[in-house]
Image 1 (tube, rainbow, N blue to C red):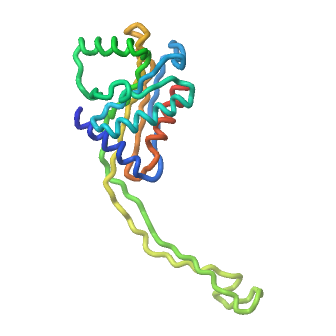
Image 2 (image 1 turned 30 degrees about the horizontal axis):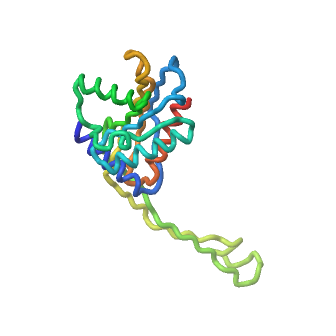
Length: 217
């Protein structure tokens, strides 16, 4: 589990230095009997040991939640010295719930890395150039046999097959309403997949938008 948390931190660092987004919601569940949580205070938790990753990831989700009418705050602001990956016993969980209640937190949104799958990706590449032969005789149609009607000549290099190692990450975002009875506290579970983040740049922001979109359904 610690390895997954470290991978999650690495994932978040990678996606901020990449070029495009590839986040996909693969599964989503929501308790339709629970009332809207926009009138409740929400705390966002990113379960990773990487402090920088935790701050940036929580910040993006909080910004998108607040833009959509939620009242949310990052866990690193509420508990700057805490470790979100620490395993807690029953008494510690009770104590944390009490602390959250004292701080006015009603809902907790937790994101954790559930799986990391390595695979081999193959892409193709070829360089093609296009050359338009000039007209030697003004605008007339007849330009020689190979230039009849302005033929375009295409030069194409052989197709190159490129094989690279890639990773596919599965994240799970779980929403709990601490104001509800124990058996009704689970509000939503959203599973997302991020494919090969080394080629991405705005995955974290896209991820946040997709989570909020699922919550608003």
